[in-house]
Length: 183
Image (cartoon, rainbow, N blue to C red; front, side, top):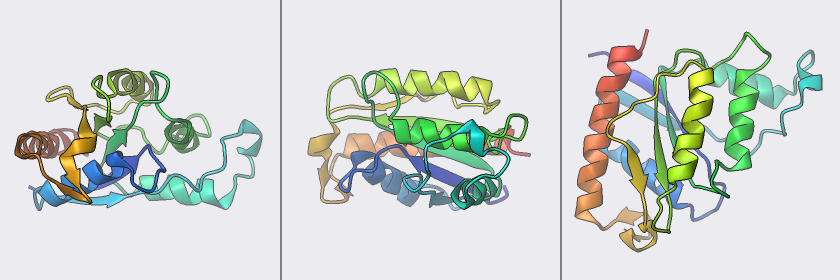
């Protein structure tokens, strides 16, 4: 199997983000066939269609960077039963101008992470709606909703063997998904 480059998009800007911790854990657990890199999104100005003809440099850089990858892993919290604005903005920036989406055809997967019991279920499914429109084949199984995550980390180290085992199965399945759907 070829090595595939994977963009990891973290939907939380919080310094001690559990989503970033989970993303880094998945990166450590990933098989050698996945070369994973966190792509930062906090620097992107809010998308404005008026900028399509003369986009900010950060838009252009982000779009070109996403086009270099073979797949995308989204790690998102849930804000008000949806995805955070920063994540939705990154999706919008990457999808424009219309007809020139950087996301088109990239296989992807979603992990929703929450200190609460619902595990970001709403955000996970809301994000899937956008991915259908973007023509991004989203991995269906295993689904990844990580609830009650706050007690599962000592600093940046995952201390829950059950969660680690699940994340290993998830990233291995994602590896197969990407290989099946990448060009």
